[in-house]
Length: 223
Image (tube, rainbow, N blue to C red):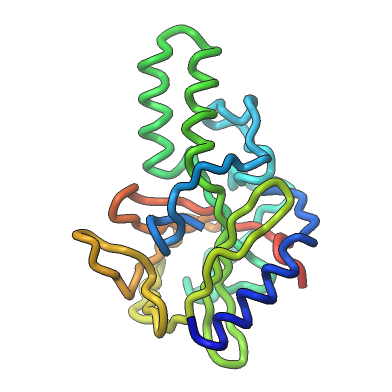
């Protein structure tokens, strides 16, 4: 970790506990986070229903939700992900790992809704709720990953990056410091392609867990 990363980490560790969030980052290792045993405090039994609104912490990405970010579909991807006061919160239901878990729970539960809810809740709790923030400071662009527990954000990592190839709905991020994650065969990967799914969400490929979806949120990071 270089001086700049250490400063950012220290700053956000101090301010994260002060985050008064009204609503809700993930690949293995760095792109964006390794599954943890700690349960996000915001997860409840009610949220286990696929398609049901998550308790703000998870972010359903539904238009009109209290803290959903509204993007301009005409924006270049780089401007969409770095929009002021915009972060991206992990969406379990829309991600490949969540879809597989829900399908498995439905098969196991059969016609028993209680078993189904408990199974899905348990699957959710195995995956940390992560929030991604892409922004520019005086030295360049940074990708900061937070782990959210209730109303608290803890900084997991900060990675300096530069933009690579860009299309109408994709943008390549290339790390200029710490690797962006672990690729196949345990080889660190230093670039990731983010897809803009729609005006409310992004998708990041994970070598082990498939495509991970994050919904745009406003006001999660203290100014």
